[in-house]
Image (cartoon, rainbow, N blue to C red; front, side):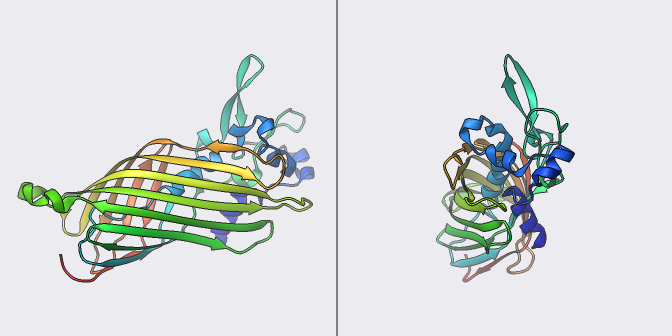
Length: 306
């Protein structure tokens, strides 16, 4: 949990270095970093990797199978996505005068103390991945499934608040066509999945009277095709569309509104059936950037038989 708090605090800029350290080492100061959340600063690209990474986290792990049973079932899990922070997250291209230049993002490198510009955050620069888990509960009946997810942290140092809430829905259509398929394909199923997540991060550094509030939104709509080559495993292909947005507020000036990875989504997952209730899921998603999805601690209890 300490690692998760560190990552969230860092993303919320809670690990920003002091002005004196930045002057010496070439990392961005707290004030310089916060100024990137002013729309007039024209530095949306500096903070855009935050929502690019969080967007993929919010829009993942909404399902654990392409099939939803007819009989009542209850489920619980602790899913999370692992999003590698790559070179594309550490720099962005911006036009300076008549030429274009590569400029460090909040995840980027430090620069010479005498150079003009904002450089990366020292702690964020050292992060190889971004992730955080959330508690997810679900219930299904007659091939329809409702999912709720959430996470909350109390105020911790400069991180004054963090919460995540989400709701998802799924419906599987296999019962309409499976018996018409050849015997070898009757374990195939198709589902429609929708997920909506909202998360808020509130950060207030020392010597600042107004907090920075980041409101994060993720929406995904997917078609999931599943096939069970054996009883104990299901291979799933996901095709869909996702949307992610980050809006800054909290005081006059904090007014950046930035879209993250919005567009086509592709996924490939494998779900396992181990015993009566243990159903771990591992997968890979691509939506503007790669991420790895895990729902290892996933349990489902079904009441009745199909």
